[in-house]
Length: 194
Picture (cartoon, rainbow, N blue to C red):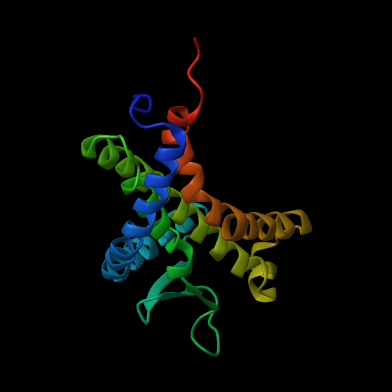
């Protein structure tokens, strides 16, 4: 990665970056809003496939409901309302708005490089979103007495799935845009070694 251009000192770089982030927030939000219905379907199917790989026999079914949610059902467990729980998929990936804005706002980097880095960050984010939704489904399962009885979860598994879900859903989800941005661009801001 190229160092900050000599004509742009660190304070000027940060000012331009902050201005650019503010300018990119609205276009990033619009792009996210337009793509969200399609992305929710993709995440639902991908999460269902991953959950079904972790169980035997494969009984989990996830279905999109009202664009922003999916419902969790099991073929081996009928429920009175037709599903065990619903999960708001959109809540998992709304920090993508900040990821887009951060990666597009970087000054003194070519557009080709910005888009390449954004592509890699997006790919990492997709895997994180699928993992996060897997943890949501497992959290639903360990919180349901009928499923706990069928699966015979230990108290360690119950607490482990709960902790993992909460960590992915709160601190990691909100830190992800900054962590990804830092992974690609922090070397530009560190003092150069002589």
